[in-house]
Length: 564
Image (cartoon, rainbow, N blue to C red; front, side, top):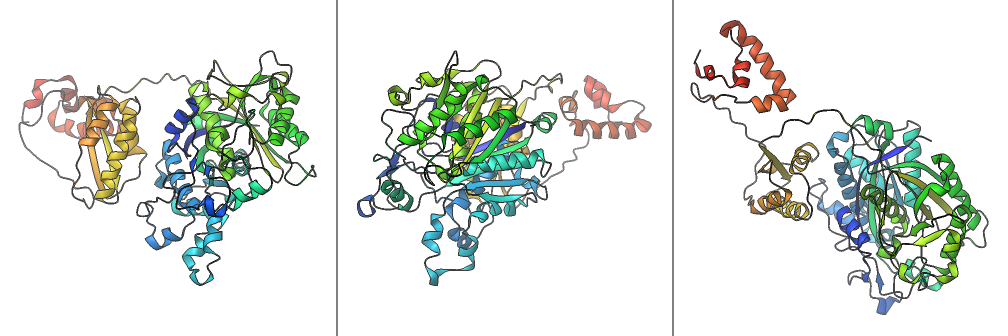
């Protein structure tokens, strides 16, 4: 199997509004579990756990940004809104301005397990409108992304219960390798709007009373529900490297299978889990012993954890050094249709940062699992990675559809190209549909940039090469030697007050005296576009001046002041 690169990603999970905060949550072993939001349901009335992994402001949506009318936006499943926003940011993270994808054969593959919005809206028969119709349906979550970005590649929603989004990744990988598309977005989304599924877990004996999953822990006592959305941008590795894309991680191999007739429709099968891992290892061309860590399914149920540990033991028992094992469900709860993509993004970030985060609840490992004998261990402290590293990722559906993936750290890329000359200053640009939105954008960018230490140059270049433009604009100039903290400070100082209906261009012809030695020399060396036009103009002038005006400028010759 050829490899596929993860070139961009975005996510939003409980306690983590973006990938940066998600990584921060994982590294500190944080807990995204909270009380059921008041606007969802009252556990005292409906029953079920009173806590879970919930998104703050899950209904927030900038409909004007996507040119969606307020009426249509109000009728959309929140999962559609979340996935549309997440897809947009994932493409930007991959260095792609989303509007430039229009007309391309980009594929969209979305995993989704539930549509509680449909339960709430389609049962109100008198209130059904055309907007309610297009606002519902699993397919529409994927279709909405392709429609708004004008993507022409394969587009589908996948429901295999808890493994949905990793199966979506598997399908996206196969579409890339078969040449069905050259770029794909794969993701998953889950929102809990009613207590129905929580009540099912409870009455089936699967629910954790405190709403927390405790994977492989002595305290494991069931599933806690979680929400979230995540997406990755995928390309064939050779294409990504040829185009100089940033690569978070490499997908070496994926596999999907089914339990068939197990001990019950919702009961896991150790043998099928073993086989799906083996198939992924074969397709990746790796030995199980080379896998450094595995992001497990890890629901925190007694039966599920036991079956999964035994399946892993078939390939990892007897290792000289036990393989690290964890599950992001300990931090977020079980995000159901988004569980697989949550695990994939965790693994991709771990390989990117060369660190495997701690396993939440690792302090009290379930002694009945006898993990050490099975060649497994939970991480009580982060694991630093050295050299190329391999990781496994499992996601198992409640109905028996299993998925496993093998990922590898991104290859080291050597470049011999000389860096462009340093510029004296950089320009950071921001746009929005209107002035209030621009002010919100300024505040959000200032907060985001202020949290990290990043070179100013790439931030500024991305702001105008990757971001799509709107009518109202702001630009901030920062010195090349200034850091991201100075840029954040400058963004906070901006006070846009008036809308501008498009850019205004002014041309100033000053006549004699405005030029100076070396004027434009630095731009000539750093910009091929400017260089091409100045060379052309110089060639035309040469028949009249008998001296190269370009050379006078580049060498700082005082003859540039001569009017002729």
